Amino acid sequence: MKTKDEIKGNLTLKGWTLTEIVNEINRRRKISGLKKTSVSNVSNKINRGTIKYDEVKEIADIIGCSLEWRDK
Image 1 (tube, rainbow, N blue to C red):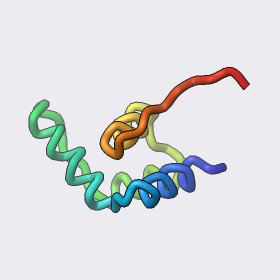
Image 2 (cartoon, one colour; image 1 turned 120 degrees about the vertical axis):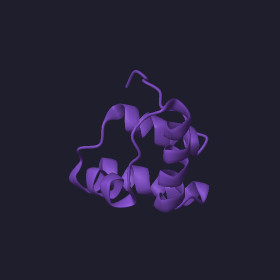
Image 3 (cartoon, rainbow, N blue to C red; image 1 turned 180 degrees about the vertical axis):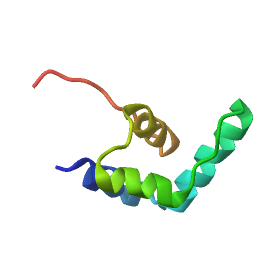
């Protein structure tokens, strides 16, 4: 499964929109003093497959999921 489909599928399953995710990312970044992002920026990263692992972990945390490494 492509990263794009995995991220978007899990957002849908958990009832989140990308706009809501970006709003929450920006809320958390404001508290930490980090630079804001935009929906188009995050969407482009997801669609191009250039999203960073840390960003995927942040999205997973927001929707109440965790990423884990398992043996095959």
